[in-house]
Length: 175
Image 1: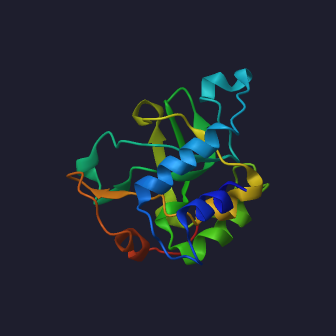
Image 2 (image 1 turned 60 degrees about the horizontal axis):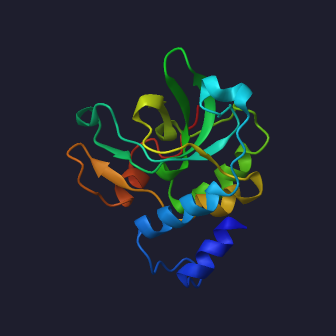
């Protein structure tokens, strides 16, 4: 599995972090490239569909509107709207890692419709995606959700502690 291979290369025992989030992000992007199969019937939706878990790089269009946002989202796709140029989903990085794995497992086989904590629900503009949209293999959703790839920044683009979004209100209220 991808997540296990990355942890082995990082030299991790348990959840002890010995590398920074950029190292994990680069490793994950490199690994996910090998698992991408594009269905060209889905080109109008940038090859994603509801029910996919995707990882990508993102730049907020209006960063000043947000207290913070994730530059490396891991999103369970709930809806794709090519006419509006966006997709909607649940970014697992807004959850403390102690909850992430359980939510990742609960999303399996939901085909888009799923209960999700309110604070994880976000719209993403295709025009602000700064990389490919990498689909995560279903058998590794839990493991990859636990890799420390999130990168939260404030409205001025300064990195902030991951604890800030994890502790943000509405932590587990779902819709």
